[in-house]
Image 1 (cartoon, helix red, strand yellow):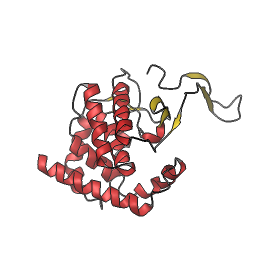
Image 2 (cartoon, one colour):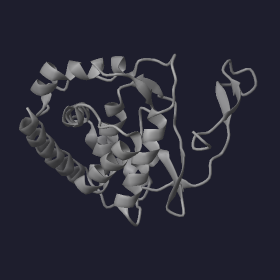
Image 3 (cartoon, rainbow, N blue to C red):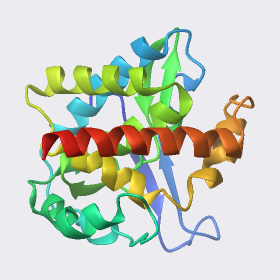
Image 4 (cartoon, rainbow, N blue to C red):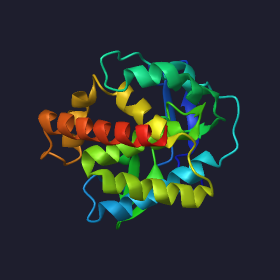
Length: 218
């Protein structure tokens, strides 16, 4: 990743030196920032960075899709996901960060400098990371940021994301019950203007948009 990911320097998995399992990694420059001056520009950088992650050849990790699907039967898109969601698990795997969002990316002078929190790294279809990051960008900034992210990702990767409309519903369905619990993370990183009610409103509006988009395509 050309310096965008921390390098492992040492590990103590058996807690022999530190009293608990520990790892030592390099420090990356920059800091997390979910309040960019230009959300659209930041979203485009996120898209290009994710395309680079997905292009890294890697095997031997866990299959992320095996642990990714929950059944939120009260979600608006639950019936669609029950019928068509299993098709997503058949798509080709790439290296996925598994929690790729603005809070796990470092910035310095409005430039992306690093990607952190790789503990969940897995093999999964590219739509997994893309859909979750799109949802996060909608909650933070609005659908325009999600579209800028997707456009930059597809341009950098040289290919469209298969089943993007269905992947958006995947992220929405799996976050339907929990989106309000994301608020402390947003507040910790400076978005104290957001409330649980506003997160739910944005989540619901994005659900309506994505359902309409999916139905237009099918």
